[in-house]
Length: 250
Image (tube, rainbow, N blue to C red; front, top):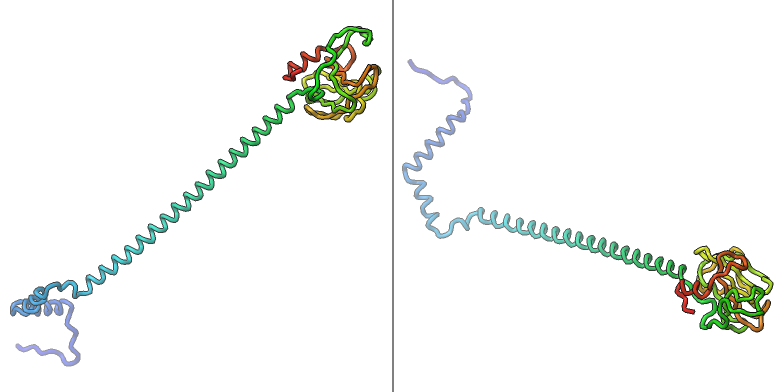
């Protein structure tokens, strides 16, 4: 019984059929030695790999990779340098702040020492009449302070920090200034030719407060200086011991 194909377009061979056909063709070529004839001379030519595009692709890839690595290394180096520069700036700022703080602390300490220091009321002078010296010159019978040798118009200084509590005429003391010191004691400056401060004014060590003179009960120009426990007459204490206890050499 014979079979005939239907008329019309033939169907395209299936994938299985195409694969099978290709496989048969390859097998046939192998059997006849055609592949061997084609491939053997290619390997015998010396260095066939260089003749292909494979090595060029590999070489190009290595070059790009090297460039990328170099760029990455440069970026890392730049980032590390930037970090190092930032760290250096921070260290410099911290050091500057520390130095500034140290200078400010030293300045505050120096100012504290200056305000707590004491000086002689007359510079480059000496005591011409001592404390408790007896005689008819004093109403109490003895000297209630000490006299510093000084001509009229010699600058008179506050011996320490304090507040002026009295100025003006003081009877036998002539023109006088009384200062309440920061330690609670009082100092008095008498026989002045000029007064340069007012009540309520604060003074610091060495501040000029007036000029020496010969006002009041005196035999000549000088500065009468007293140290007291109160602003009143009669509360006097040894002024030499007082000044020396505060570091003044008299």
